[in-house]
Image (tube, rainbow, N blue to C red; front, top):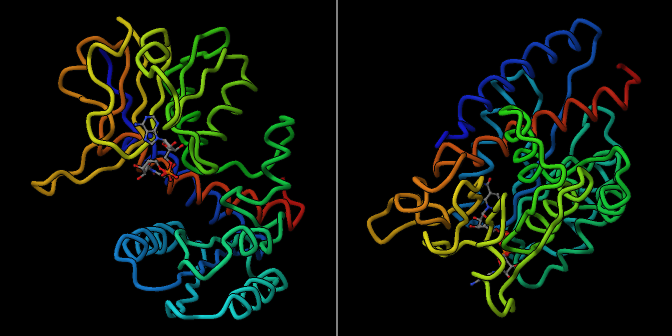
Length: 283
Ligand code: NAD
């Protein structure tokens, strides 16, 4: 069994990103990221702080638009339009979840597809489906980078994605299909989860349920990618896979923490640099 070390790979990508930013700065270009943060959800604040710190370390300019919980949808849309038209901003990210009175789809759709570094705009979603170069959501993109780093070719593999959200499971499914894996996708209404997971050469889980995947649900020698983030009653961060018992059966597995998590932020930096290059016509 080999561990897929996302922490090490993310550090490597972040170093490369810093070098790329330095080269862009020599050409008079400073990549810029704008984050829209609404309300006081502690997890959202933590994630945004991590993103700000990563930008700072990489040399990317970043600005956070903090707004109160009761902000109007109109004000959020106004801020996004302002950022769409700001030449110093290459990437716009709306930290989710948004408060209940806000139409999340409407807000995400307001982000210019050219600055949509999270890959949530319908234009980028459609381009991903069509396998056209576009902004791909950071977490599933990070998983693909991790597989590539360890020379894992997914072509022809039986893959199973558990979790079918717009930001994790669905884009993950398309990325795998675009590389010619045979993909099964499961969700809360899947009748017999084990029947699907136990057939998979490559099992990717992004649900948010501690120990959802147990040893008996995993094929011998499978590659297991755990995207889930859960806090145990003891305050420990764990994934969706019963790591201790599943790991001995796997050919490769991601730990939590230190697997997919660090890759997500590294991909955000990559997407922001990609946008800056495209907007300034630099290869
Ligand atoms: P979500 O709640 O939007 O979606 C969860 C998905 O899991 C849904 O499709 C749902 O149908 C499915 N599901 C729920 N219970 C299930 C069950 N018992 N069996 C099968 N499917 C089930 O969540 P999300 O935003 O997609 O996030 C999923 C997990 O990934 C969370 O733990 C989240 O914290 C984590 N996450 C991690 C990163 C990272 O950087 N590592 C990034 C994003 C999300």
